[in-house]
Length: 348
Ligand code: AMP
Ligand code: MG
Picture 1 (cartoon, helix red, strand yellow):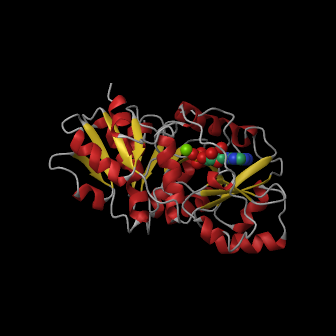
Picture 2 (cartoon, rainbow, N blue to C red):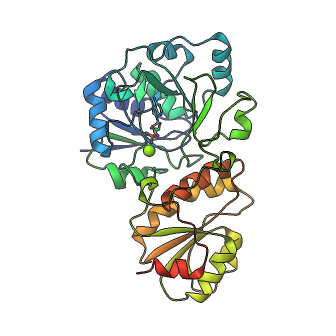
Picture 3 (cartoon, rainbow, N blue to C red):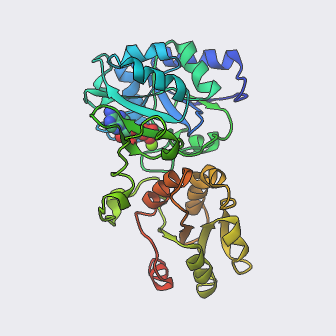
C-alpha cells in the first residue's frame, strides 16, 4: 500500500514530514519532490532499503544512485574529505540543482555506489526534500521516481502512475520547478568533467569551474559522431518519436495532415500549424525554462494519446537548452528528421 501525503511545498506540515521520515528510518521507501524532478529514496546506509528502491524502479544495480544531504556537515558522512577551496564552492552552489561525483569514504553500501569507490552527492533546494532528510537524520539515496527508462516524474501524478503500490509513501508537493534532472560534475579526476547537463547551466558553472571539460556532452567540441539507435534511448515513449526543426514541423503538419502525428512544439510553431493538428504546446521559445518544465509531462502524454508517433521541436543548445536537448535527443533515440519522408517512414 502506498500512502500519498499532500503537502504545501513551501511549508510542509511537520506531521507529514515526520511520518515519511519514520518510514525512511524504518527501512521504507519514500518518493519526494525536489526542485529538479521527484526522487524515490531510502536511507543511504540501509542496503536492504536501497535494494527495494532499485527493485521498485527496475533499475540495473550497476547504475549508482545520487545521495541527498541537507547540510554541508553531512558531506563527511558519505564522502572522503574535500579541500577547503572546494567546500567554499559547495557552500555557494548548494542547495541547488547540481550534483558532484566525489571520492567515497567507504561507508556507503555497494547498493548505493554500484561498488565504485566514488559517491555522487547533492543538496537539493527544496523545502520538502531538506526537511525530510533533516527529520530522518540520515542521507537519502534517491534516483528519479520513475520506472527505469521512462521520463522522470515532475508531478506526484507521474510518480503515482509509475510507483503506486510499490513505494511506501509519496509526498505530493506539486509540480517540480525545473522539470529536468540535476547537472552532474565529476570531481574525481584532475579536471572537472561534465557528465550530465542539467538544471544548472554550464555557462553559470564555468564561473566556478573555468576548466570544466564538457567534451563528452557537447559533441561539436570533439567531433565525435552522434551514434544513432536504441542504445541511447532513455526518457522514451513507447511510440516512435523524432526531433525536427520548427520549419520541418510546419511542413510535415500540412503534408501529413490526418495521419495522427502528435507535434510537440513551441507556442510559436503551434500557432503556424494547420487547424485540428494534434499538438502539445511546450511554451514560448523565449522561455526555455518553461519548455523544460513541460517536457517530461508532454512525453508521457504521447503514449496516452491516440497518435501513432510524435515529432518534437529542436531548440538551441544554449543555457538550459543544452540539458533540454540532451533529454529530447535521448527520448527520440537520437533521431533527427531531415525530411517529411523520414517522418512518414516512422508511421508504419
Ligand atoms: P537518477 O538516478 O535518475 O537521478 O540519475 C543519477 C545519475 O547519476 C545516473 O546517470 C548515474 O549513472 C549517475 N551517477 C551516480 N553515481 C555516479 C558515480 N559514482 N559516477 C558517475 N555517475 C554516477
Ligand atoms: Mg533517472
